[in-house]
Length: 160
Image (tube, rainbow, N blue to C red; front, side, top):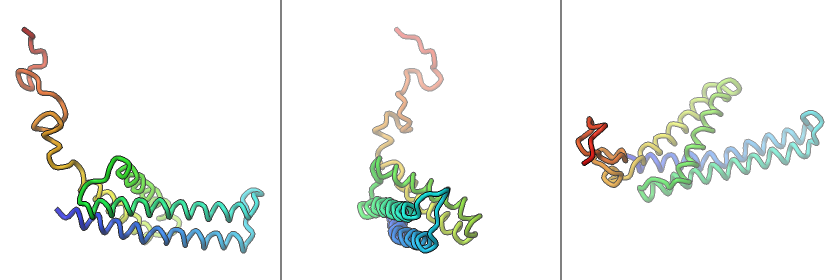
């Protein structure tokens, strides 16, 4: 399966998107500063600081998600529990932003965000269960349920 290239492409896209998000928030902060904008009487300087903080935090989160995907691709192993949680959160945020972006920005932004969602989800699915995890989980089916005496139809099997 081509899971290593998928993870590496996902990592590249997320690592390129991270500074782009910081730059976009920097541009918005500059507009707020120049226009001296405020929301319901809030200090414009606080609005600028908040915009910068959101941009830096979003950029760091995207870079961290990109590093998780990069490590998964380089090691050719699935990410750990924390890494999978980060990637799931990244996919959810991109899906929500895509739903908002289609109305505010247009179909091009929606297509880009849905492509990122697809790459992240494909990375997660490609690195699903580890090989050999089915045998360790309990049975040949790997469902984790212990096998009962008498087979699957013996729900009320009598004990000695």
